[in-house]
Amino acid sequence: MTQLVDQWGRPVRKRELTREVAGPSLTGVRSPLTGYPGDGLDPRRLANILREADEGHPERQLELAEAMEERDLHYVGVLGTRKRSVTQLDITVEDASSEVTDKRIAEELRTWLLRDELEEELFDILDSIGKGYSFTEIIWEQSAGQFWPVRLEARDPRWFRFDRRDLKTPILIGENGQDEPLPAYKFIHPRIRAKSGITPRSGICRAVTWAYLFKMYTLRDWAIFTQTYGQPLRVGKYPIGASEDDRNTLFRAVANIAGDCAAIMPEGMEIEFKETGNVGASVDLYESRADWLDKQVSKAVLGQTATTDAEVGGLGSGKEHRMVQEDIERADAKALSGALNRDLVRPWVDLNYRGHGRYPRIVIARPEAEDLAKWMQTVGEAVDRGLAVAEDDVYAKLGLRRPSEGAKILRPGGQNAPQAPGQPGAGDGNPPESAVKYPLNTLAALSAAVGRDDERGRSAGGTAPLDIAVDQLAEEAAPEIEAMLGQIEAMIAAAGSLEELREMMLGAFDEIPTETLAQVLGEAFTAMHLAGVAEVADEDDG
Image 1 (spheres, helix red, strand yellow):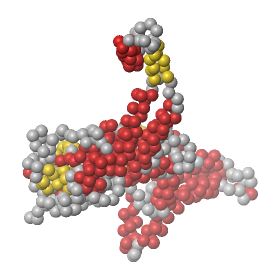
Image 2 (spheres, one colour):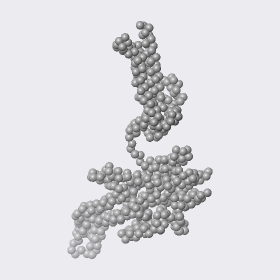
Image 3 (cartoon, helix red, strand yellow):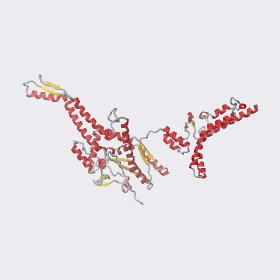
Image 4 (cartoon, helix red, strand yellow):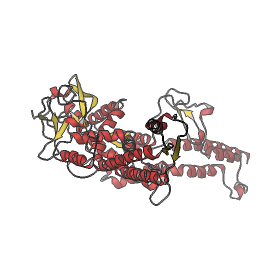
């Protein structure tokens, strides 16, 4: 028996699938406790952090990325918007084929996707948008020889490295600190890149770090400026000849008046408050710089600024910016779908249906707006020309359920009637009066003609009631007959011999719609009978 291997050629060890291999430990190297490289961050320190990541040690870069999401409200807002826009999209499953086994596999996958925890798990998987990559461990459960993913556990990316030879192949940091290859079929490992290059340099956080650093400088200077100039300057005046104790008393009063809002001093001393001029212009400078940096972050994360920075009007705003964001959303959704199909669906099928070789596909996408009226018109015309269309496909396209037994069926012109087997009027030939309407005018027209000739009369070459019945039958039945003839013509064109044409016609007999034609013929025969009776009576009278 051949050895089952993953996409990297690593052998699958089934005993490892049901246990956690990358969990945290307080005493080992995979500690959940984190460092804070963002404290006291300056350009030199930031450059060193990024250089370490380029050399295959991204731990401090990942810790800085976490700190940026915690401290920069704008960055965590736009990054969260981008992640949540994907987790809210519809998730569908495409069958590998129409075979029974493939349909069963796809249905098992659909059932698993109904889990309430899935949205939170997908949000954690999309941590790769900010950092460039993420690792999610699959915890499998085995029962009756079948494997089932019971949960997806997000793992700290600091517990993984990349092979120094290519900085691409992921490696797990073992309990003893030694690098270990990732066990096969155990991890979902998406890579959502903001730029091309080695994996540690591909995340958005790399581009945003410098904007974050400069924004922190701006906010710090803004805070110092506000503290210094937000209140007026206090100046204390003491009379000539004041003692040293009097001067010290005055100074303490001036120093503490901002916080205490109260002070005492000897009589004759005075305190003035000097307002600082041009404070407004200085405040605008800090705010403008912080806003400009936020806009650059919005462009990096969402590709535009109109949906986050409240810009009104201007070229390229509004709808165009939203279209840019939707382009990024589609790209993220395709990347996530691809990672799930590669790292979850394929292993699942290989473990339970070894050698099957066909896999269903998870598709995450926003439903495209579609003109259903135009679609129905096109399908109707195709069916009229002989194209076989499955009813299930039409129901699925329209988002409708197939009627259950006993359901009340809607009919044209508000003609609603129970049509399921066993219900009144269902195939017994005696439908209740309220359940049957006559949309066709055959019977009404022919009945009106019974007992009368046209204005000229038969002796003057008028039309007899029976002739009227024949003409009305031809008019009412023509569309149905034309549809049948169109389908027969399509069969004649496709058949290679008379024997093949015969088999095609016999096979399609049950699918030819005959309900409307049968109704027309029934009404016409009734009217013809009445017309014939009228003619006989007229002849007897003559």
